[in-house]
Image 1 (cartoon, rainbow, N blue to C red):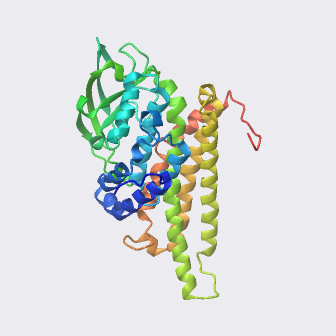
Image 2: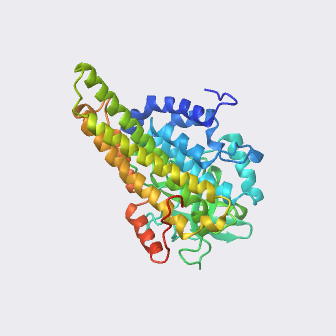
Image 3: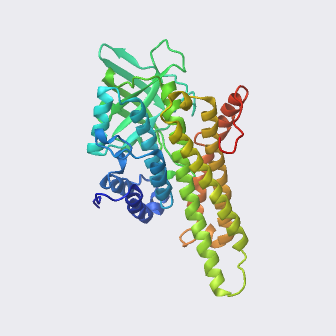
Length: 390
């Protein structure tokens, strides 16, 4: 597959989605990396679209990337999630690495070579709390070294570079963190956990003992607290929501096809699942509207670091994630009830088991309970904007 110059991001993502669809069930059944889909992303040069044109990218907006996530999610949840997580890490580089010579050169390399970026923020002893670290980066002259017990590194064995968090130094508080870029030739991975899960099996999110050594200039110049608040928080919740929306779109499409087939068999009689299909369609529109509203708010706030770091913005992004992750499960459950045993069985045109299992990850990454706890603390001191056009 070769990219056609001048085609839209969505058209290119649609071509990748067609490749991903062919292999999605096998990726899920075998818990394997969606190699074919990622190779198609590389062929379409989708891994660098977020990078500024001055560094070889295409200046894609978060909204355009989210649209690509939803298109991929309609075919293969794992491939869509790999794409989303790559661009979440890339957003940190684009937002916080542009003034650093090394990180700018690295972004150009990502564009030239279509490098796949992974993330290592979770750690043994702290779970999924990305704003805390136990490990600390060691700086020795111009070199930095890091050892981290990373309980999860999604597609870590397949990545070309890993962006990893740690304490800023040995005496730093657990929340005084930095993020460092290590390229594949600068680290080793020793597997500690196997990713054998209910869903999202193809993300291959095994656990690894990470040991890396690199020039200290590869440490991002901004504290991770700023990086998390100004790029990772919003892009995670918005791009994940794009993936989940895509999963739900395909589930509703299968349910709609089932209802139409039933209607053709009994002309003039409303099929039993017709009302549920209307309800699922309504909920799907809610997820779409919720995600679009979040994307518009992020695009409007991008030029204002203070707004990106504000309590109100954090609450809004948290709410996008909570609403999307909870609603997609309801939608897919409705689709399952519409399709009945044909949706419950594997290997039918209406099968929904993979959709349902993959969607269950939505409330766990990052845990909705953790996000609700953070939001409740913010609401103790922040007055919500209640205007309709807020």
